[in-house]
Image (cartoon, rainbow, N blue to C red; front, side, top):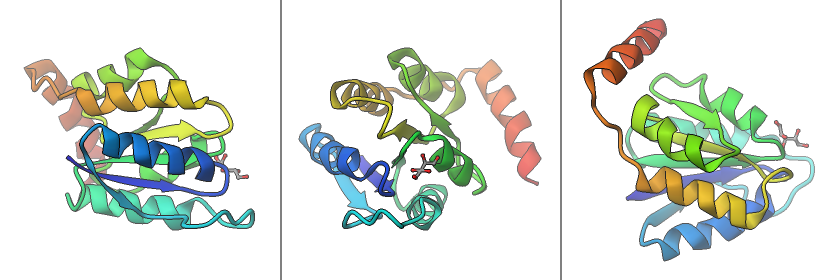
Length: 147
Ligand code: RB5
């Protein structure tokens, strides 16, 4: 899959590491920045372009990292068609895709260690939406809010 990735200074180090990990899993990675550590940068400047690319299906899924993952999730969810969530456990990483068609995984670079973050990414990228009627019905109720 073509995977987009983005981070501010709070997630920069983890992003750089996860980028290599995602490539090792066999995916193509498009990096939306930051491209250097800048302690004065702002997460929307990287997360919103990533979210727009996910919504436009330029990339299939996204990974957004900031210090806590909270700001990244808030910003990404402002873009119609994006279903982003802050993930701190393996179950939610795959179940979020299976039930809720999660398309942007948000991680806290100051919260999750590299091994945990890799585990979340693997769960997220390895999962598929079930397409079950009850899940589609719920997602329709959510996407109706974007109209
Ligand atoms: C940056 O210091 C920090 O506020 C940001 O990375 C993020 O944690 C926001 O949610």
